[in-house]
Amino acid sequence: MSATRLQSDTVHRTPRPRETFQRGLLGSVVLLLIIAGAELLFLEPGYFSSLALHPFWIVIVIAAMQNGVAVGAITSVIATLLVGLPERLIDESATVYAARAAVLPLQWFVVALIVGFYRQKEIEETDGLRAEVVRLEKISGSLAEEVERMDSMVAALESKAASGVAPEPDTAPKPDTAPKEALFHRALPELAALAGSYGADLPHSFEDAADALFDGPVALVVSAQGRGEFVIGTTPENESDATTLAQLITKNLEGKKGRSHTILLKDLGVSQEGALRVARQKPKTDNDMTALVIYYAPDRESADAATARLEIISELSRIAIERLSRELEAPESQQADTWDRE
Image 1 (cartoon, rainbow, N blue to C red):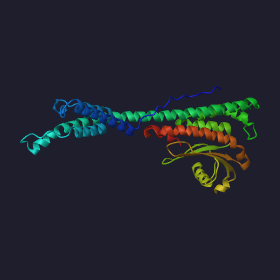
Image 2 (image 1 turned 120 degrees about the horizontal axis):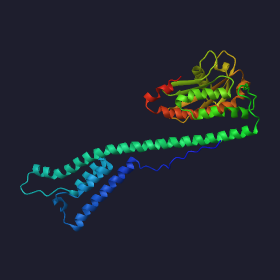
Image 3 (image 1 turned 180 degrees about the vertical axis):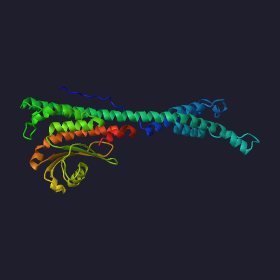
C-alpha cells in the first residue's frame, strides 16, 4: 500500500487588526506632517486654507478608505489641529467666527465617518474570510498529520503481516491466541474505513472494525460537554447500560495513569462476572470531548489479551471523533442527524 501524503499551502502571517490600525494611522500622520511642512517651507502660512480644496482632504479620504472609520476619524482630528484656527475678521461675532472655524473640520469628520463606515464593513468581511482560511489550513494540516500517521501504522502492520503466518479464512473464529499479525491484516479494510469515516458513517464503520478485531461486544462512548453521551457498538446484557458503565469506569479511573486498563465488573459494583478492557482518549476538539472504548470479556485474562487490538481501534476512533467534532462546528441544523444516531 503506497503512502498518501497531503501538502498544505504555506500559511503567510496576516497582520493583526491592531498592527493594521497603527500602520494606517502612522502613515496618515506622516502625510499630514509632510503637507503641513511643505506649506511652511515653500509657501506662506495659511496658503492651503485659501484654496477651494485643502490638500488634507486627500489624506483623510485615503485614510478612511484604506483603514476604516477609526483611522479616518482620528486623521481628521489631527488635520484640524495642524490647520489651527482661522483669523477672526473685524466686527465678526463670536458665534459666526466659531461656525466658520468649525465648517471645514466638521466636513472632514463627517466624510471620514461616512467613508470609514462603508470601508469598515468590507474590512470586517475580509478579516472573517482570512480567519476562516487560517482555520481551514489548520484542519488541513491536522488531516495531513493523521494521514501520515495512518500510512506509517498501515505500513508497519503490512510488514508484520508479510512476515507472519497466513491469515485464517474469514469464517474461522478469532480466538485471542490467533496470530496478531494475521488478525490485523484481515481487519485492514475495516480499520482504514474507521480512520477515514465521517460523522454519519462513524457508527457503522466502528461496528465493522470492532467485529473484525474482537469476538465479543465492544462499545464506544463519546461524551461532549452540553450534549450528553453518544454510544455506538454492541454491549452485553447486564444490569447497567453502556452510558452508566462509562460513568462508573470514569470514576474508577480517577487518579490512574495510562490510557488502557483492565477492570473487573465487580469492582464497578456490578453483580456480574466478567471484566472490561478500557481505552480512554481525549480528542483534540473544541467541544471538550472524551471517549471510552470498552471491550467486554469473560475474564481478566481475555481482557488483557485484547490490549493491542483495543489500542488500535481506540486510536483510529480518536481520529474519526476529531473529524466528527469539526462537523459539529457547522450549523446545528446540518448536524442534528449526525449526533442523534444514538
